[in-house]
Image (cartoon, rainbow, N blue to C red):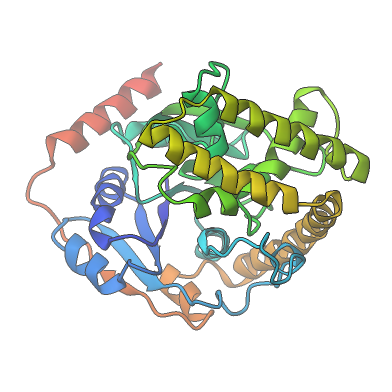
Length: 368
């Protein structure tokens, strides 16, 4: 594992776990900061960790200059369907920096994720020769949308989760996919022209608890991306290609509405928790009724165009890296007008038992 890339927007104090993993794996930690994550706090807090190579950079509010303008970020205009979050843009910048820096295997890790056994990330990296993405199984709080959380909590035992960007290893030296600016952007990242790319799952990670029903705006912001992703994967589950026909999305929007209504009917009304869930589902249902089949078709057409745009862009980055040789991550950041704060690695007089155990597991794996 060459690097751990964290798109962080919460307190920099949460980066200790990512720093621990980077030390154990001898990987660079790259933190792309915004909102409540201050690069100076990140560096100051992690400076005490010996043998840690870390770079923390403030992510521009308007996005990194020099990256291609993607249709998926503009096709919705200023409508309420546009998701205003920078996670996708941060991950895209991470992909570009990895290619420019000559990193082969990287892992995207959210700042609320814990990986108990660092060796699980090496096991994920070992599969990247034949897979375009390897996720860790997510324990702790399930990685679901608000609607899917409500579906599971009201008795649907078949509600499942899929590998996601919270703990996802990717082959940075050859992957040509991107994260669109939408909820479930990691699902789109794992899709190719014909369907799902080769993906795998290994190891285990834990996500911190949160309350998905606390703010109804969460459900509103997720609904369009959840509709598109669930609609696409419903087709793939039946061996059908990704649909861009208006008729399909007209039918799927109706099915989605019935799903939400069914969940509402199973909620225990009259309790504070039940009322909170109903408000969140009401917000999702209101946003769903705003979505038109044409919105789905236009977005997917833009996404297909962006696939080619991004593929061509990353091909140019790769050719430049081959001709000029890999850059340092600091030099790669400077090419986008960004300056990182860094903490130089310091040698330790003795190896921690945890690192020794990791090395022992690696050696035992090689024997088998």
